[in-house]
Image (cartoon, rainbow, N blue to C red; front, side):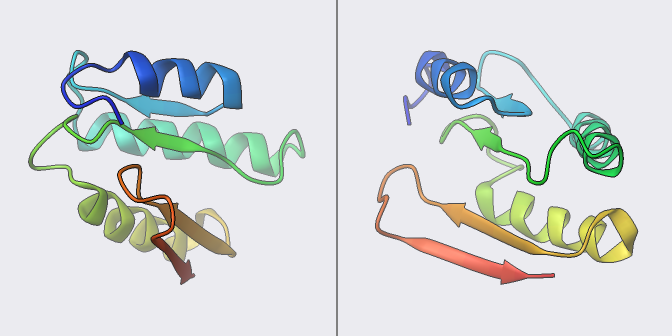
Amino acid sequence: MGGYCGYLATMAGLAGGSDAAYIHEEKFGVKDIMHDLEVLKSKIDLGKIERGLILRNEKANDQYSTDFLTRYICIVWQSGLKKGCLMLVSNTDPCQISYHVV
């Protein structure tokens, strides 16, 4: 979604009410991801939301790929954030959906 331009992911995040959007123009690391997951957890615990949305621009970061984020979020989710289902949709092929029950 957008290559090196985070505009599409940002606009999709604004339109869809995402909790976070990781884009190429704004550098992020594991601490940022962990902070976003903690904010998401607090919103769920307070009953403000039932699910969250985190977007990642396809060229946001070579090290923090969608696969890495999937594995990392699953590990964090299993360690007590929230039980449920994590659904990832490829932004280059919307028909490719992967479900991870945690």
